[in-house]
Image 1: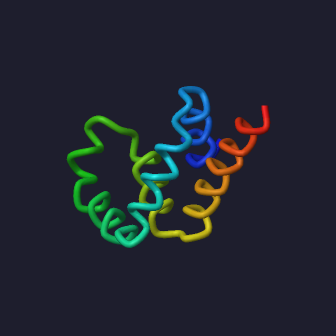
Image 2 (image 1 turned 45 degrees about the vertical axis):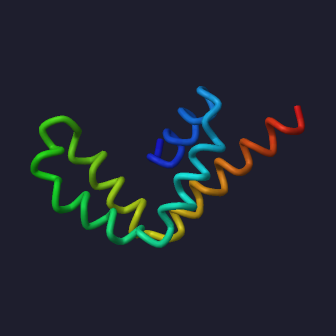
Image 3 (image 1 turned 30 degrees about the horizontal axis):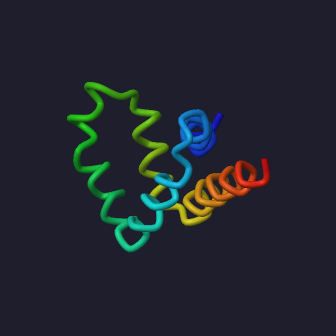
Length: 84
């Protein structure tokens, strides 16, 4: 399971899709900066998180397709919830 799927499932489980969309939209201009922060802080974060998770986060913020995929998944979850 990719990190986008895990994030979308957690947001759906706790009804945080709207907050996730807001977070992604507010970070859109800073995507690359966040990616650099993840790379810079990797030695410190690797104490608490698996390196695979950090690599996935780095890729999520650098790869526009993956970023948009997460955004679309959250948006679809909101629309699905509205239709219920």
